Image 1 (tube, rainbow, N blue to C red):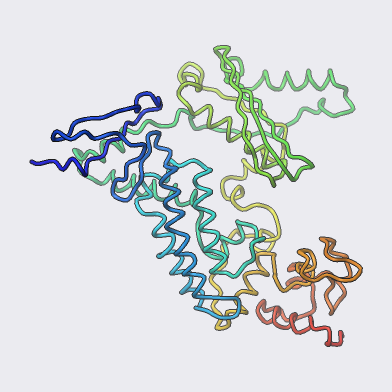
Image 2 (tube, rainbow, N blue to C red):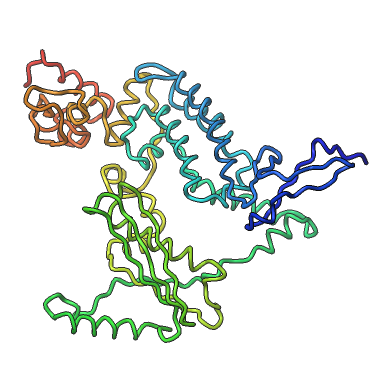
Length: 425
């Protein structure tokens, strides 16, 4: 067999950069030097298997496809929505998820966000929703799952296929040899607070009651203790969280994690909790589960505990306007209307960001007045509905304005009353 040295690639998989420094081998008498990345069957591998270069390539691949999707539709013209969804899922998401079962489950959240940005751009082209639309409502209206959702699905599908292979197949052996997570099942969540912990009881009495409650927890004497906390400036911005992990061996670890420039205090608490659990899952941090099987995590946020206790569905379906109109957590069906303009109105109204709203246009400075160039005050006179003198937010248009109860007809009828030449009645 003759080996083509000019087509041979070398990459050293190591966390130590010195291992990959000046690595060269001779292939058929020709020196071949190691490179930082290797492209194998369309997937770009890097030395640390972080897949950062691969995600950068995905972004470059997806961007022109999204631009072509935008050319198929506009605010008042374009393909029917089921056609747009087919293009978005097949032409864009299909290209992004090529061989994704091999690399997507190992990707970091920052890299997943790069993919989600492109998916959100495709979702805006499908639905016609503005840039300010919340991500969860936007993706639900477009019928597009996020990269993190697809990661679990693709990994489970690959594992099922590998388990169905013959017993001697290397892929099946690899799937069955996967080391399980060191964090065991059997999780209980409690929001109980001793009656002695009321503020009027005094600091010393409250501390004694809390310590007594914690010491009575099952396995507390040999447990791994985690104390996490999160906060956001004013409860809405520049949030972050951290945690102290005290192992039963006496070793302590601290972790910190940012929660985003726009976030709630509850989200910051959950980010701190997630960072602590990820740290505990590491082999060098997690204690021996046979000797120390109990882990006790303490949070000071009842809202965060209730969110975790409600399960994954509640965590991926945040509170807000969108959840208030889809209370059963059923994703909306595609809008099957002949009019593209009416379909866009439906998506924008249901997502809570209607671009034809006077209140929305005034808030972003597109509808200034002599008295007010633009503000977010729903009571500002420039943002009022001409029919009933209330701010024409999506909540008002859908739930309170005395118009037809069909969303598309309601939007069209409401728009007809936006003309300044119309006499309110």
